[in-house]
Image (cartoon, rainbow, N blue to C red; front, side, top):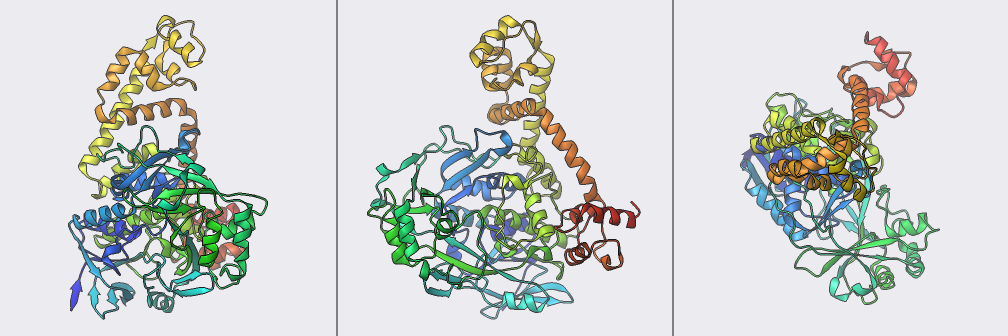
Length: 623
């Protein structure tokens, strides 16, 4: 049996699904290979999407034309906008999701995507001919010919699961690990490493006493991720907050002698910003408690996810420690938490398109590149799938800069800096985060995506309507004035200083204490004008308010981005011999020769390459 496709995507997690959908929507014939058709789009860890910086990524994926935002909206059971008390650069949307419905929606959308076929099997190797991808070979011995491959293997490459002193092979609990790909890539010249992640125990919600916990409801007026016509939630399920205590910590410590973390059986590094509970107890010994989020797994299930209690301790220790937590006195476990160790490939071996530097048309995306998190994986899959399709059509690649998107920051960090521990996105990683807000992802990215044929005409039209509405409102505010009699009652009510003479409305709207929506309601004429915006009214008014209140910050950040971005337009030949540039530091020569940056801008962001090294290169290039 022989099959032929344009692109084969290996793995049907968040990265693989986005890669398959993007490539197919760019008119390519795609085969998505997964070990289990029932696990397509499975949420392996917590049943939630978005969060700090991660929510911005989901909005960017949606603006480009990916599916994660739509799937999240359709399967949500709660919506919250995080950091709303801070400036808009920090606002981050998050949904709690129905785990089963999430996977069901992903499979349904992929099945309805023309050009995506499925095959249930394990890929054990790739076929390389003359330095280019030619296909894959499965465990059943089937040879599938193709022109490009996207590897999105997640935690399955030589995965080992740890629970106390027990360890066994697996990519997830109850699922086999994948073998063969790591060994082959190493033989082809790739470097690999080991990483570790973990998950908490799952609990029977009927056995918990919620009266001892603090309720965490969703937003009163819930938002959504997608810029399309997905519907906001009409009802929501609450999450709950509780805490560990010193008795819990003492019980956990009794199991440390059997912990794979402390006995050296786990070699891979775990995520710094999502540590296991035993790691928290050790690293933060001065804290007498740690916060736990008690999260429902869906609308119609009693299963509970204990966010913050990731562990690989023996199951009996887990059970005893859980029952010392307020509200968990009679807790019953469905399954214990566990740690998993797996292979990854340092991402500095890739181009910014996520194509391998060693093998043409081989792309890697997701946890195989050393990242952690659904959102980080999904955006890599989207970019890899797009560029695999564009490569085959011999078109210019789709690469996002650090000033265009959080996705651009993530990929640039991976390629220029590499990672030795699971990489997680934070707002602090983005130097232009005031420009990269969750509310304007469509304005930043939909035009670009539409140009290459991924974002639909309908998406572009909505962005144009939004931009036109914003400009109309801003022009009106700058052109028209209000008198003291008209506006002072509103200003006094808002706690803002009254005016003594007529002023332009935009100067009032830009005041810190003035709520734009309240101002519009106070001025009938402008309220009527904004009402003509229809379903996009709230989005437009939010954009106008941010534009007015943060104009100075936005302008300064844009100027800085333009200035520093000029280096990204100075190309460096991939075969450049840095060894002959003797004025470069030894470390710079080594790093540049290893990573082979494509531009001076990328070179400037490599750890160990100093400004003086960049100056030397500029002189050498005649700049």
